[in-house]
Image (cartoon, rainbow over all chains, first blue to last red; front, side, top):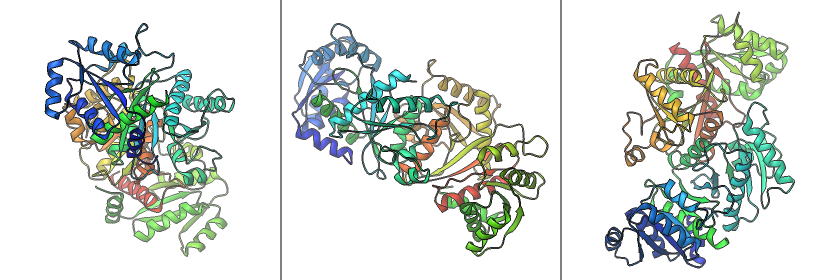
Length: 297
Length: 297
């Protein structure tokens, strides 16, 4: 896959997915699913205060299924139950607090728990990159420990495989490509690499520590004499913490003039949370990512 | 300043600076100072094994001053003494270990200590940025504490002022723009902001925490209703640690197709350490940065 458009095009080729929009009184969210509906890969179900949702639909000249809910708690529960019962495939955040939606998604009785850690993946497209590259986790786990990093990798690998990248190359990033006992990030990277060699992290090739240049540029890796199957060709960049991941994802937009799509993984169904600042192509690609991921499950 | 070329052009307008190349048996380093010499803003002094240096000069058809030194320790001491005595203005790393050169630079008798912390600044240029933006510290301090962050800011502000940015705008970056007690990076950012308001960090406007989008894009800041004199217009991005800084600096090259120039500050004279992977414009801009910084001192 070279661009976010390729992800959208792939989503059009699979079965239409039902997207439950929680808090559909948010016009921007309804507009996003409406555009994905026009492209033919999404069937929206809108949850929230019926009157407000009806107004949004009138503005768009659309007529989607509405499930009335008075509060953000009721909306969240109804949306999550719709997905856990199989009546919807993807959860999307509208006008509800992220914390409320995620709490509902993790409800032990009727939620979407899988035992995995919940993590965020951003998929970057920039004019300078030859293919899409994933960054994780710049949106959910603040400072993941080793076990959480394993889940972060597994979640991203599952997403990559849903995009037909069968054996994704995973670079565990740090400031340097050498192991430095004074930098715990480089120790975790080494351990994750070896766990992958021992078959404890599957369906991918993990290598780290790598610096961003070694991960993305074959030439930069060669200059440093790095022997690696990942260096220069990384599909997935695993960052040390939420700050470095957030900065890296946003640099794709604000330094590089590119775009990112985002998704939350680790639950039984993917969750889409788009940002008000995302352009409409980014939002549609986020929905397409979720549909592809849902198809794989 | 819009591009690295503007920094080079500025360096041409000030007095020529004497650059002591430590370990000038490194052809790439000698080539870089030679090109800066051709542009007219550098006078090289080459330190290291005389025979090797002579060969390098023959290849380039140049004739610069040579100071013979047998080992990397002797080269480092001679280079640092040249600068601390005032016979040279800028120190540049050639074929010596960074740790050996820095240890010499910090020698208590004849070194370049100032009492400040030593930090790295990368200056980024990308097609999407409207001006050059500095990132600090992605190269020296692994996990700076609050006091070290103050020095990091002071060092970068001094550099910005040497580039005629009289009151630089300093964004202290994190993953979010809200203060979160569970993210110590956002607490440091708040404290640094308030210290600036109280006049404890001078000659700049500090604001944080800011996420990268808020720091660089006025629109992104507006969407989030952020009231800030820095948001959208940051000259200096202060990152939480070496990993996030290294990733951000390198994203300017490998995601954005831009360039970075780098410099080490906090010593009595600036130190230039270029990377083998830097292109010749980046190397020249690093030298130009050092010359500008030296002029200010």
